Length: 494
Image (cartoon, rainbow, N blue to C red; front, side, top):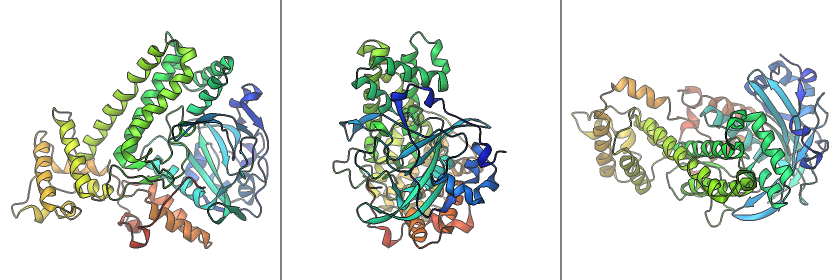
Protein backbone atom coordinates (compact mmCIF):
# COMPACT_ATOMS: atom_id res chain seq x y z
CA UNK A 1 0.00 0.00 0.00
CA UNK A 2 1.11 3.55 -0.74
CA UNK A 3 1.37 6.63 1.42
CA UNK A 4 0.39 10.05 0.13
CA UNK A 5 4.04 10.74 -0.62
CA UNK A 6 4.64 7.51 -2.56
CA UNK A 7 1.64 7.37 -4.92
CA UNK A 8 3.08 6.29 -8.30
CA UNK A 9 1.90 9.18 -10.45
CA UNK A 10 1.95 9.23 -14.22
CA UNK A 11 -0.14 11.29 -16.64
CA UNK A 12 -0.65 9.90 -20.12
CA UNK A 13 -3.01 12.74 -20.98
CA UNK A 14 -0.23 15.24 -20.23
CA UNK A 15 1.88 13.61 -22.95
CA UNK A 16 -0.54 14.91 -25.56
CA UNK A 17 0.59 18.18 -27.16
CA UNK A 18 0.41 21.26 -24.90
CA UNK A 19 -2.63 22.80 -26.62
CA UNK A 20 -4.83 20.00 -25.21
CA UNK A 21 -4.53 21.53 -21.74
CA UNK A 22 -2.97 24.20 -19.54
CA UNK A 23 -0.59 23.26 -16.78
CA UNK A 24 -1.37 25.11 -13.55
CA UNK A 25 -1.63 24.50 -9.83
CA UNK A 26 -4.87 24.55 -7.83
CA UNK A 27 -5.69 27.65 -5.81
CA UNK A 28 -5.28 27.10 -2.05
CA UNK A 29 -8.51 26.60 -0.13
CA UNK A 30 -8.61 28.69 3.06
CA UNK A 31 -9.01 26.83 6.36
CA UNK A 32 -9.80 23.41 4.86
CA UNK A 33 -11.44 20.62 6.82
CA UNK A 34 -12.28 17.05 5.88
CA UNK A 35 -16.00 16.34 5.41
CA UNK A 36 -15.78 12.70 4.31
CA UNK A 37 -13.44 10.23 2.66
CA UNK A 38 -13.86 6.76 1.19
CA UNK A 39 -11.45 4.01 2.23
CA UNK A 40 -12.80 1.86 -0.59
CA UNK A 41 -11.91 4.43 -3.23
CA UNK A 42 -8.51 4.96 -1.64
CA UNK A 43 -7.97 1.25 -2.23
CA UNK A 44 -8.55 1.73 -5.97
CA UNK A 45 -5.27 3.65 -6.16
CA UNK A 46 -3.49 1.51 -3.59
CA UNK A 47 -3.58 4.24 -0.93
CA UNK A 48 -3.36 2.98 2.64
CA UNK A 49 -6.70 3.86 4.33
CA UNK A 50 -4.73 5.05 7.36
CA UNK A 51 -3.59 7.98 5.22
CA UNK A 52 -7.12 9.42 5.21
CA UNK A 53 -6.80 10.49 8.84
CA UNK A 54 -3.52 12.36 8.39
CA UNK A 55 -3.71 16.19 8.44
CA UNK A 56 -1.70 16.18 5.22
CA UNK A 57 -4.53 14.34 3.46
CA UNK A 58 -6.82 17.34 3.83
CA UNK A 59 -4.11 19.73 2.68
CA UNK A 60 -3.28 17.67 -0.40
CA UNK A 61 -6.90 17.24 -1.49
CA UNK A 62 -7.83 20.82 -0.78
CA UNK A 63 -5.26 21.72 -3.43
CA UNK A 64 -3.10 23.50 -0.84
CA UNK A 65 -0.07 21.26 -1.23
CA UNK A 66 1.07 19.44 -4.38
CA UNK A 67 1.07 15.67 -4.14
CA UNK A 68 4.60 14.43 -4.90
CA UNK A 69 4.78 13.34 -8.52
CA UNK A 70 1.56 15.04 -9.60
CA UNK A 71 1.50 17.33 -12.64
CA UNK A 72 -1.72 19.40 -12.41
CA UNK A 73 -3.46 20.56 -15.55
CA UNK A 74 -6.85 21.68 -16.84
CA UNK A 75 -8.11 20.20 -20.12
CA UNK A 76 -9.80 22.08 -22.94
CA UNK A 77 -12.98 20.85 -24.62
CA UNK A 78 -16.16 22.25 -26.15
CA UNK A 79 -19.73 21.05 -26.40
CA UNK A 80 -23.45 21.44 -26.93
CA UNK A 81 -25.39 22.66 -23.90
CA UNK A 82 -29.17 22.17 -23.93
CA UNK A 83 -28.91 21.42 -27.64
CA UNK A 84 -27.08 24.65 -28.51
CA UNK A 85 -23.43 24.90 -29.50
CA UNK A 86 -21.66 26.53 -26.54
CA UNK A 87 -18.18 26.84 -28.05
CA UNK A 88 -15.05 26.38 -26.02
CA UNK A 89 -15.59 25.14 -22.48
CA UNK A 90 -12.96 23.12 -20.62
CA UNK A 91 -12.08 22.35 -17.02
CA UNK A 92 -13.25 25.63 -15.58
CA UNK A 93 -12.85 24.50 -11.97
CA UNK A 94 -11.15 21.13 -12.20
CA UNK A 95 -7.48 20.22 -11.95
CA UNK A 96 -6.26 16.85 -13.15
CA UNK A 97 -3.40 15.88 -10.83
CA UNK A 98 -2.28 12.88 -12.84
CA UNK A 99 -2.85 9.17 -13.12
CA UNK A 100 -2.10 6.53 -10.50
CA UNK A 101 -1.77 2.84 -11.31
CA UNK A 102 -4.00 0.95 -8.91
CA UNK A 103 -4.41 -2.78 -8.29
CA UNK A 104 -7.01 -3.03 -11.08
CA UNK A 105 -5.83 -0.36 -13.50
CA UNK A 106 -5.05 3.31 -13.84
CA UNK A 107 -7.13 6.11 -12.27
CA UNK A 108 -6.91 9.79 -13.06
CA UNK A 109 -7.30 11.96 -9.96
CA UNK A 110 -9.10 15.26 -10.37
CA UNK A 111 -9.86 18.05 -7.90
CA UNK A 112 -13.22 19.68 -8.68
CA UNK A 113 -13.65 23.16 -7.24
CA UNK A 114 -9.94 23.86 -6.92
CA UNK A 115 -9.94 27.36 -8.42
CA UNK A 116 -9.91 29.26 -11.67
CA UNK A 117 -8.36 28.02 -14.90
CA UNK A 118 -8.08 29.60 -18.36
CA UNK A 119 -11.40 27.86 -19.12
CA UNK A 120 -13.40 29.33 -16.22
CA UNK A 121 -15.19 31.88 -18.45
CA UNK A 122 -15.37 34.59 -15.76
CA UNK A 123 -16.52 32.09 -13.10
CA UNK A 124 -14.79 31.73 -9.74
CA UNK A 125 -13.52 28.18 -10.28
CA UNK A 126 -15.03 26.98 -7.03
CA UNK A 127 -17.59 24.34 -6.07
CA UNK A 128 -19.86 24.62 -3.06
CA UNK A 129 -20.32 22.26 -0.14
CA UNK A 130 -23.85 21.35 -1.25
CA UNK A 131 -22.95 20.14 -4.73
CA UNK A 132 -19.69 18.52 -3.58
CA UNK A 133 -21.49 16.36 -1.03
CA UNK A 134 -24.10 15.42 -3.63
CA UNK A 135 -21.42 14.36 -6.12
CA UNK A 136 -19.48 12.42 -3.51
CA UNK A 137 -22.56 10.53 -2.36
CA UNK A 138 -24.03 9.88 -5.80
CA UNK A 139 -20.77 8.70 -7.33
CA UNK A 140 -20.51 6.03 -4.69
CA UNK A 141 -24.24 5.28 -4.71
CA UNK A 142 -24.09 4.58 -8.46
CA UNK A 143 -21.08 2.33 -7.97
CA UNK A 144 -23.05 0.43 -5.34
CA UNK A 145 -25.87 -0.03 -7.85
CA UNK A 146 -23.40 -1.44 -10.39
CA UNK A 147 -23.78 1.50 -12.78
CA UNK A 148 -20.64 2.73 -14.62
CA UNK A 149 -19.52 5.95 -12.96
CA UNK A 150 -16.69 8.18 -11.93
CA UNK A 151 -15.73 7.60 -8.27
CA UNK A 152 -15.24 10.01 -5.38
CA UNK A 153 -12.41 9.85 -2.87
CA UNK A 154 -13.24 12.71 -0.54
CA UNK A 155 -14.85 16.08 0.10
CA UNK A 156 -12.86 18.90 1.69
CA UNK A 157 -14.78 21.95 2.90
CA UNK A 158 -13.90 25.50 3.80
CA UNK A 159 -15.56 28.51 5.39
CA UNK A 160 -14.61 30.61 2.34
CA UNK A 161 -17.78 32.24 0.95
CA UNK A 162 -18.93 31.48 -2.60
CA UNK A 163 -21.74 33.36 -4.30
CA UNK A 164 -24.34 31.27 -6.12
CA UNK A 165 -28.09 31.85 -5.84
CA UNK A 166 -27.21 32.65 -2.21
CA UNK A 167 -23.91 32.88 -0.36
CA UNK A 168 -22.60 29.35 0.26
CA UNK A 169 -19.28 27.93 1.39
CA UNK A 170 -16.55 26.44 -0.79
CA UNK A 171 -15.55 22.79 -1.11
CA UNK A 172 -13.42 20.51 -3.26
CA UNK A 173 -14.48 17.00 -4.24
CA UNK A 174 -11.77 14.61 -5.41
CA UNK A 175 -13.01 12.29 -8.12
CA UNK A 176 -11.43 9.41 -10.00
CA UNK A 177 -11.93 7.93 -13.45
CA UNK A 178 -9.80 6.02 -15.93
CA UNK A 179 -10.27 9.12 -18.10
CA UNK A 180 -12.31 12.32 -18.03
CA UNK A 181 -12.37 12.70 -21.82
CA UNK A 182 -15.82 13.68 -23.09
CA UNK A 183 -17.79 13.80 -26.31
CA UNK A 184 -17.05 17.53 -26.30
CA UNK A 185 -13.31 16.86 -26.26
CA UNK A 186 -13.67 15.61 -29.86
CA UNK A 187 -16.15 18.28 -30.88
CA UNK A 188 -13.60 20.90 -29.89
CA UNK A 189 -11.00 19.87 -32.46
CA UNK A 190 -13.56 19.15 -35.19
CA UNK A 191 -15.03 22.64 -34.97
CA UNK A 192 -11.55 24.15 -35.06
CA UNK A 193 -10.83 21.96 -38.13
CA UNK A 194 -7.65 20.71 -36.47
CA UNK A 195 -7.65 17.19 -37.83
CA UNK A 196 -4.24 16.24 -36.50
CA UNK A 197 -5.38 16.95 -32.94
CA UNK A 198 -8.66 15.13 -33.54
CA UNK A 199 -6.76 12.06 -34.67
CA UNK A 200 -4.26 12.31 -31.80
CA UNK A 201 -7.09 12.36 -29.27
CA UNK A 202 -8.86 9.40 -30.87
CA UNK A 203 -5.59 7.47 -31.02
CA UNK A 204 -4.95 8.25 -27.36
CA UNK A 205 -8.34 6.83 -26.35
CA UNK A 206 -7.90 3.74 -28.51
CA UNK A 207 -4.38 2.98 -27.36
CA UNK A 208 -5.08 3.61 -23.68
CA UNK A 209 -8.59 2.21 -23.26
CA UNK A 210 -9.87 0.43 -26.36
CA UNK A 211 -6.88 -1.32 -27.98
CA UNK A 212 -9.21 -3.91 -29.52
CA UNK A 213 -10.46 -1.18 -31.87
CA UNK A 214 -7.04 -0.99 -33.52
CA UNK A 215 -7.61 -4.38 -35.18
CA UNK A 216 -10.78 -3.17 -36.94
CA UNK A 217 -10.80 -2.16 -40.61
CA UNK A 218 -11.47 1.40 -39.42
CA UNK A 219 -10.42 1.85 -35.78
CA UNK A 220 -12.35 5.13 -35.46
CA UNK A 221 -15.54 3.51 -36.67
CA UNK A 222 -14.96 0.77 -34.11
CA UNK A 223 -14.42 3.41 -31.41
CA UNK A 224 -17.73 5.12 -32.22
CA UNK A 225 -19.51 1.78 -32.12
CA UNK A 226 -17.94 1.00 -28.76
CA UNK A 227 -19.04 4.37 -27.36
CA UNK A 228 -22.52 3.84 -28.80
CA UNK A 229 -22.87 0.46 -27.15
CA UNK A 230 -21.56 1.60 -23.78
CA UNK A 231 -23.70 4.73 -23.81
CA UNK A 232 -26.78 2.68 -24.66
CA UNK A 233 -26.12 0.27 -21.81
CA UNK A 234 -25.40 3.15 -19.41
CA UNK A 235 -28.68 4.94 -20.13
CA UNK A 236 -30.58 1.65 -19.90
CA UNK A 237 -29.15 1.35 -16.37
CA UNK A 238 -30.30 4.90 -15.58
CA UNK A 239 -33.83 4.25 -16.81
CA UNK A 240 -34.15 0.94 -15.01
CA UNK A 241 -33.16 2.37 -11.63
CA UNK A 242 -35.10 5.63 -12.09
CA UNK A 243 -32.02 7.90 -12.25
CA UNK A 244 -32.08 11.25 -14.04
CA UNK A 245 -28.80 12.97 -14.87
CA UNK A 246 -30.40 16.37 -15.29
CA UNK A 247 -27.90 17.96 -17.68
CA UNK A 248 -26.87 15.59 -20.48
CA UNK A 249 -24.84 18.14 -22.41
CA UNK A 250 -22.20 16.70 -24.73
CA UNK A 251 -19.46 18.05 -22.46
CA UNK A 252 -20.96 15.90 -19.68
CA UNK A 253 -20.90 12.64 -21.67
CA UNK A 254 -17.99 10.29 -21.02
CA UNK A 255 -16.17 8.71 -23.96
CA UNK A 256 -15.82 5.60 -21.76
CA UNK A 257 -19.54 5.30 -21.03
CA UNK A 258 -19.34 6.46 -17.40
CA UNK A 259 -21.84 8.57 -15.51
CA UNK A 260 -19.98 11.88 -15.43
CA UNK A 261 -20.53 15.29 -13.81
CA UNK A 262 -23.14 14.99 -11.09
CA UNK A 263 -25.05 18.25 -11.01
CA UNK A 264 -28.86 18.51 -10.78
CA UNK A 265 -29.41 14.75 -10.77
CA UNK A 266 -32.32 12.95 -9.14
CA UNK A 267 -33.71 9.52 -8.40
CA UNK A 268 -37.41 8.99 -9.05
CA UNK A 269 -39.74 9.13 -6.07
CA UNK A 270 -43.36 8.97 -7.29
CA UNK A 271 -43.08 7.65 -10.84
CA UNK A 272 -43.66 10.17 -13.61
CA UNK A 273 -42.08 9.56 -17.00
CA UNK A 274 -42.12 13.30 -17.67
CA UNK A 275 -40.33 14.21 -14.45
CA UNK A 276 -37.71 16.96 -14.78
CA UNK A 277 -35.14 16.85 -12.00
CA UNK A 278 -33.37 20.09 -13.01
CA UNK A 279 -35.42 23.21 -12.38
CA UNK A 280 -33.14 25.08 -14.80
CA UNK A 281 -34.42 22.80 -17.60
CA UNK A 282 -37.47 24.86 -18.54
CA UNK A 283 -38.34 22.83 -21.65
CA UNK A 284 -37.77 19.40 -20.14
CA UNK A 285 -35.03 18.48 -22.57
CA UNK A 286 -33.45 16.21 -19.97
CA UNK A 287 -36.58 14.69 -18.43
CA UNK A 288 -36.59 11.01 -17.46
CA UNK A 289 -38.41 9.87 -20.60
CA UNK A 290 -36.15 11.96 -22.85
CA UNK A 291 -32.81 10.52 -21.71
CA UNK A 292 -32.66 7.68 -24.27
CA UNK A 293 -33.39 10.11 -27.11
CA UNK A 294 -30.82 12.60 -25.83
CA UNK A 295 -28.19 9.87 -25.64
CA UNK A 296 -28.89 9.19 -29.31
CA UNK A 297 -28.67 12.91 -30.17
CA UNK A 298 -25.38 13.26 -28.31
CA UNK A 299 -23.89 10.32 -30.19
CA UNK A 300 -24.69 12.06 -33.46
CA UNK A 301 -22.81 15.10 -32.16
CA UNK A 302 -19.86 12.84 -31.43
CA UNK A 303 -20.29 11.13 -34.79
CA UNK A 304 -20.12 14.48 -36.60
CA UNK A 305 -16.87 15.17 -34.77
CA UNK A 306 -15.37 11.80 -35.72
CA UNK A 307 -16.69 11.86 -39.31
CA UNK A 308 -13.40 13.07 -40.83
CA UNK A 309 -11.67 10.01 -39.37
CA UNK A 310 -14.43 7.53 -40.20
CA UNK A 311 -15.35 8.54 -43.72
CA UNK A 312 -18.74 9.55 -45.04
CA UNK A 313 -21.81 10.38 -42.99
CA UNK A 314 -23.49 7.15 -43.98
CA UNK A 315 -20.75 5.21 -42.19
CA UNK A 316 -21.19 7.39 -39.10
CA UNK A 317 -24.94 6.82 -39.12
CA UNK A 318 -24.49 3.07 -39.50
CA UNK A 319 -22.02 2.97 -36.60
CA UNK A 320 -24.49 4.74 -34.30
CA UNK A 321 -27.67 2.99 -35.39
CA UNK A 322 -26.10 -0.45 -35.24
CA UNK A 323 -24.68 0.09 -31.76
CA UNK A 324 -26.72 2.45 -29.60
CA UNK A 325 -30.34 1.39 -30.06
CA UNK A 326 -29.70 -2.37 -29.92
CA UNK A 327 -27.56 -1.92 -26.80
CA UNK A 328 -30.08 0.32 -25.07
CA UNK A 329 -33.15 -1.71 -25.96
CA UNK A 330 -31.60 -5.09 -25.28
CA UNK A 331 -30.02 -4.09 -21.98
CA UNK A 332 -33.11 -2.25 -20.80
CA UNK A 333 -35.31 -5.27 -21.49
CA UNK A 334 -32.87 -7.53 -19.65
CA UNK A 335 -32.76 -5.20 -16.66
CA UNK A 336 -36.54 -4.82 -16.50
CA UNK A 337 -37.10 -8.57 -16.76
CA UNK A 338 -34.76 -9.03 -13.83
CA UNK A 339 -36.52 -6.33 -11.83
CA UNK A 340 -39.84 -8.07 -12.47
CA UNK A 341 -38.48 -11.49 -11.50
CA UNK A 342 -38.45 -12.89 -15.04
CA UNK A 343 -35.54 -15.19 -15.84
CA UNK A 344 -36.41 -15.93 -19.47
CA UNK A 345 -37.08 -13.76 -22.52
CA UNK A 346 -40.48 -14.69 -23.92
CA UNK A 347 -42.69 -13.28 -26.69
CA UNK A 348 -44.91 -10.53 -25.37
CA UNK A 349 -42.43 -9.29 -22.77
CA UNK A 350 -42.06 -5.90 -24.46
CA UNK A 351 -45.83 -5.37 -24.33
CA UNK A 352 -46.00 -6.47 -20.70
CA UNK A 353 -43.18 -4.14 -19.67
CA UNK A 354 -44.90 -1.33 -21.57
CA UNK A 355 -48.13 -2.08 -19.68
CA UNK A 356 -46.17 -2.01 -16.44
CA UNK A 357 -44.90 1.49 -17.11
CA UNK A 358 -48.40 2.50 -18.19
CA UNK A 359 -49.92 1.49 -14.85
CA UNK A 360 -47.03 3.17 -13.01
CA UNK A 361 -47.67 6.38 -14.93
CA UNK A 362 -51.37 6.31 -14.11
CA UNK A 363 -50.86 5.70 -10.39
CA UNK A 364 -47.50 7.30 -9.57
CA UNK A 365 -46.33 4.81 -6.92
CA UNK A 366 -42.89 5.24 -5.44
CA UNK A 367 -40.66 3.72 -8.12
CA UNK A 368 -38.02 2.18 -5.85
CA UNK A 369 -40.50 0.88 -3.29
CA UNK A 370 -42.74 -0.62 -5.99
CA UNK A 371 -40.08 -2.98 -7.29
CA UNK A 372 -38.62 -3.72 -3.86
CA UNK A 373 -42.03 -4.62 -2.44
CA UNK A 374 -42.95 -6.57 -5.56
CA UNK A 375 -40.04 -8.87 -4.81
CA UNK A 376 -41.73 -9.87 -1.55
CA UNK A 377 -45.01 -10.98 -3.13
CA UNK A 378 -45.75 -14.67 -3.64
CA UNK A 379 -46.16 -16.04 -7.12
CA UNK A 380 -49.75 -17.06 -6.40
CA UNK A 381 -52.60 -15.10 -4.89
CA UNK A 382 -53.48 -15.99 -1.34
CA UNK A 383 -56.79 -17.84 -0.95
CA UNK A 384 -58.07 -14.96 1.18
CA UNK A 385 -57.80 -12.56 -1.77
CA UNK A 386 -55.32 -9.94 -3.01
CA UNK A 387 -55.49 -7.79 0.09
CA UNK A 388 -54.03 -10.56 2.21
CA UNK A 389 -50.64 -10.83 0.52
CA UNK A 390 -50.44 -7.97 -1.97
CA UNK A 391 -50.91 -4.99 0.35
CA UNK A 392 -47.24 -3.86 0.20
CA UNK A 393 -47.71 -3.17 -3.51
CA UNK A 394 -51.45 -2.35 -3.61
CA UNK A 395 -51.04 0.34 -0.96
CA UNK A 396 -48.64 2.24 -3.21
CA UNK A 397 -51.37 2.70 -5.83
CA UNK A 398 -54.14 5.26 -6.10
CA UNK A 399 -56.30 2.75 -7.99
CA UNK A 400 -56.04 -0.54 -6.12
CA UNK A 401 -58.21 -2.32 -8.69
CA UNK A 402 -55.65 -1.37 -11.33
CA UNK A 403 -52.92 -2.77 -9.09
CA UNK A 404 -54.86 -6.01 -8.66
CA UNK A 405 -55.36 -6.35 -12.42
CA UNK A 406 -51.69 -5.77 -13.14
CA UNK A 407 -50.58 -8.23 -10.45
CA UNK A 408 -52.79 -10.90 -12.08
CA UNK A 409 -50.92 -10.33 -15.37
CA UNK A 410 -47.59 -10.41 -13.56
CA UNK A 411 -48.37 -13.70 -11.88
CA UNK A 412 -49.51 -15.18 -15.15
CA UNK A 413 -46.17 -14.21 -16.69
CA UNK A 414 -44.31 -15.72 -13.72
CA UNK A 415 -46.27 -18.91 -14.25
CA UNK A 416 -44.78 -19.31 -17.70
CA UNK A 417 -41.40 -20.00 -16.05
CA UNK A 418 -42.19 -22.08 -13.00
CA UNK A 419 -39.37 -20.78 -10.78
CA UNK A 420 -39.81 -21.28 -7.07
CA UNK A 421 -40.83 -18.24 -5.05
CA UNK A 422 -37.68 -18.46 -2.95
CA UNK A 423 -35.38 -18.39 -5.97
CA UNK A 424 -37.29 -15.60 -7.71
CA UNK A 425 -37.64 -13.44 -4.61
CA UNK A 426 -33.94 -13.70 -3.84
CA UNK A 427 -33.11 -12.75 -7.43
CA UNK A 428 -35.45 -9.74 -7.29
CA UNK A 429 -34.01 -8.49 -4.01
CA UNK A 430 -30.55 -8.66 -5.56
CA UNK A 431 -31.46 -6.27 -8.40
CA UNK A 432 -34.11 -3.99 -6.86
CA UNK A 433 -32.43 -1.60 -4.42
CA UNK A 434 -33.95 -0.77 -1.09
CA UNK A 435 -31.88 2.41 -0.89
CA UNK A 436 -31.20 5.10 -3.47
CA UNK A 437 -29.89 8.65 -3.03
CA UNK A 438 -33.20 10.47 -2.85
CA UNK A 439 -32.96 14.26 -2.85
CA UNK A 440 -34.26 14.50 0.71
CA UNK A 441 -31.56 12.12 1.95
CA UNK A 442 -28.81 14.16 0.32
CA UNK A 443 -30.37 17.37 1.65
CA UNK A 444 -30.49 16.01 5.19
CA UNK A 445 -26.79 15.17 5.03
CA UNK A 446 -26.00 18.60 3.58
CA UNK A 447 -27.93 20.43 6.29
CA UNK A 448 -26.14 18.47 8.99
CA UNK A 449 -22.76 19.18 7.37
CA UNK A 450 -23.51 22.89 7.20
CA UNK A 451 -24.06 22.73 10.95
CA UNK A 452 -20.70 21.00 11.42
CA UNK A 453 -21.99 17.43 11.74
CA UNK A 454 -20.45 15.23 9.04
CA UNK A 455 -21.61 11.92 10.48
CA UNK A 456 -24.75 11.89 8.33
CA UNK A 457 -22.66 12.16 5.14
CA UNK A 458 -20.71 9.12 6.29
CA UNK A 459 -23.90 7.25 7.24
CA UNK A 460 -25.53 7.88 3.85
CA UNK A 461 -22.33 6.89 2.07
CA UNK A 462 -22.01 3.65 4.02
CA UNK A 463 -25.65 2.74 3.45
CA UNK A 464 -25.64 3.41 -0.29
CA UNK A 465 -22.56 1.30 -0.89
CA UNK A 466 -24.83 -1.72 -0.19
CA UNK A 467 -28.18 -0.62 -1.62
CA UNK A 468 -29.65 -4.11 -2.04
CA UNK A 469 -29.02 -5.27 1.54
CA UNK A 470 -31.37 -5.08 4.47
CA UNK A 471 -29.67 -2.62 6.82
CA UNK A 472 -31.83 -2.11 9.92
CA UNK A 473 -29.55 0.63 11.21
CA UNK A 474 -30.31 2.68 8.08
CA UNK A 475 -34.01 1.93 7.78
CA UNK A 476 -34.74 5.68 7.83
CA UNK A 477 -33.12 6.02 4.40
CA UNK A 478 -35.70 3.65 2.88
CA UNK A 479 -38.64 5.81 3.96
CA UNK A 480 -40.81 7.84 1.62
CA UNK A 481 -39.86 11.53 1.30
CA UNK A 482 -40.96 13.59 4.33
CA UNK A 483 -43.39 16.47 3.88
CA UNK A 484 -40.64 19.07 4.15
CA UNK A 485 -38.91 17.62 1.09
CA UNK A 486 -41.83 18.26 -1.27
CA UNK A 487 -40.48 21.61 -2.43
CA UNK A 488 -36.85 20.54 -2.90
CA UNK A 489 -35.40 21.53 -6.28
CA UNK A 490 -31.95 21.23 -7.81
CA UNK A 491 -30.46 23.29 -10.60
CA UNK A 492 -27.26 23.81 -12.54
CA UNK A 493 -26.09 26.20 -9.81
CA UNK A 494 -23.15 24.64 -7.99
